[in-house]
Length: 115
Image (cartoon, rainbow, N blue to C red; front, side, top):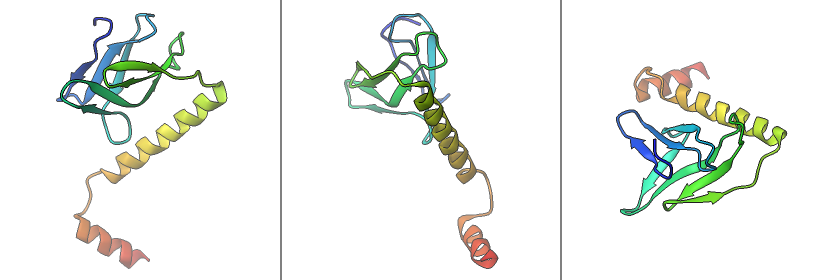
């Protein structure tokens, strides 16, 4: 990977880049409703939410917005734990909602029946 380049793979639903702090670590951000999303305005790319590289030695935290890096404050250990817990809950919830199951009408009928 080259520094300053955001690589986007639509088929693999992922983005990758070298950490913006310059440490050289590769950062991969999965694209999904519960993780990251990308927007392209015809010129610039934005990635949301922020990228918190808390597992890396640099522990950098930044946004990629309109093709530029916007640095964010460092999170405390407690904030990192809270953020990871929230992200895990959102991912679990999103995964559960998108599991194959009965068609929507049947699912609603079953939910009504169980009540």
